[in-house]
Image (tube, rainbow, N blue to C red):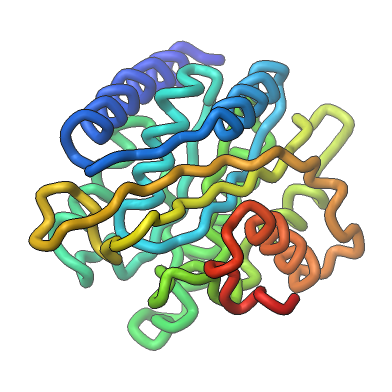
Amino acid sequence: MNPLEHARSHWRTVVGKTLWWAAEKYAYPDIIVSDETRENTMALGAHLDRGGSALVIPNHLSGDDIPLEQAYLIDALGTSIQRLTAPVGKKQFDGREGFFNAAVLHALPYIGVERPLLVQGYDTGKYDPELTKRLRDLAFYITNRTLHTPGGLLMYPPEGTRSKDGKLQRARLGVGHVIIDYLLNSTSESPPAIIVPAAIIPTGKFSRSFNWKYSKRPLDPLEIRIGQGVPMDQLSYNFNPREITADCMQLLKGMMPSHMHGFYASK
């Protein structure tokens, strides 16, 4: 690792640990992390330490669920994470869902998190098609680079947008294309990549915006679940993004309670 990447990794660790400490102590009513999740997190860290990379696929319920999972993983894994990437929506980055949300996304590179921009499918009419394509191509370049970096960790929510009812929605095909891109560009020297399902599980009332304890209405604790890693090349190996995405959602479904299965309840 070059000196700049080394410094960035340490700075990201300091910031992430601070944010996780603040989240546990002050910001949230309670955060539940089971022994099984801690064991799976340690296994993920060992994989990264051996020079592997990982694609973390979380569900998406609220504006703060993915940042909360990032803070947990940074706190738990520290400098085992050599590169951290989390694509974000152009709409949110532009402040169309609030100034605070946009400010956080603008600040991510300063704490060592790459955040390639993507125009979400429902929002393409708001942006020039050429810009949409350029952003998509750049995002695929960055995500592919992360998965080909020893110790690289990519967080990519397959659903793309927040669930309206707390249940799994039909996934978009982006995650399937990311996996195909990795497989097609892999060589014998590429780091072995795994897919790790992750989920936020509400224990009662939760907010689609922020779940802080100082909310206007009482909110219940959240549970963070991290699943076991699955080698990426064990998924459907016919380079069909729809089938690969479906495989990913089965991994995610398998670690969630049945009342949250939503679109995938009967699949």
